Length: 454
Ligand SMILES: *Cc1c(COP(=O)(O)O)cnc(C)c1O
Image 1: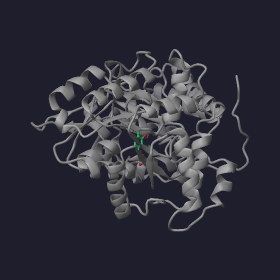
Image 2: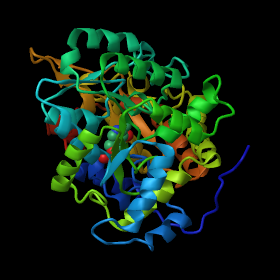
Image 3: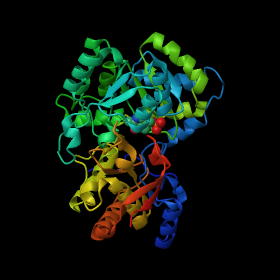
């Protein structure tokens, strides 16, 4: 068993507020964890996005920021890294992933259009809706079986994709594929599935765009689990993935190990021209796109570090360590453990709380109350929606996500998280559900106010 392939050069002190303080903090935050101050959090597993520890090599790169308005040196370094890994003809930097989504969808979606995906992430879904489109999820059935151990539960149901294109082809401007599939538990998509989706897209003349936020972790799972890839490098696997697509949206805040940054890449030169015009309007000139030269450099270097196999092995091993320990303690988690996070299934953990009272939200609050650990709700607060008749439709999975920042915490921190779950489990009958007292819309989870039902 190998330890981390790095040593710690800089540390950032963290404190744990007392139980009484935590109670006060929760109340003041209206039981929405997004309102809690970072300095009041001991272990922050809210997200793995933008929370990575940069390397000394990246920090050195920050000092080499070329802050010229046009054609700065760092843009060309980033261009080289993107060419090497992704291989698309064109790209524009963006300040983060959702800006890439915004630019792509505002350029190619017209009202009434449909965008299918294995599963859209929340900002992707919201950006499609904001442009008058309809996001559609076509995951394989296994995605909804939280405890079934299948190797590639992130896959798209290709039969359903074909059916949708048979019926509604003219309404579909592009097909998306999220790797790894964040909204279904960080589960990977197999190369076989990517190839099939790509073939269907070609058959119907539709471009395939990959939401590539965690492509390196996905490539690592392909290497580990898919026949024929054991002896391929992560770079070779990534090259093969992107050779099957026409473009990608990318948040550098995940597998590029930066605190801010992203890009939109594509092969279509005509689309690129339109994208550049749109980019100039909302992000900036096409060679910096909402980022400083130093940020471009950190992302160029981070992209290359993010495909290092020793790094990926230790990264995934830490996430799986947390999953294994929770499993041993009988805490219901999504199986198998995904790439960037462990997901606790709250309907099973707190069966006495109905979905209308947000069991995953209750668990998030309880984890903070117990140990000042911050997690995030991925359940009814995020995904419940009203149908045409005004009846609320609840998502099939009610999850609390424990996302692990890259290169930040040790396994001793993971042990604290496990212990907190054990303590919560011992007193779970006392835990109340919640109601929303303020907040609506598809992004309400960021701002809603809650109150305990009891
Ligand atoms: C994070 C994420 C995004 C959005 O990226 P941001 O940098 O947070 O704007 C889009 N899709 C997926 C799958 C993500 O995980």
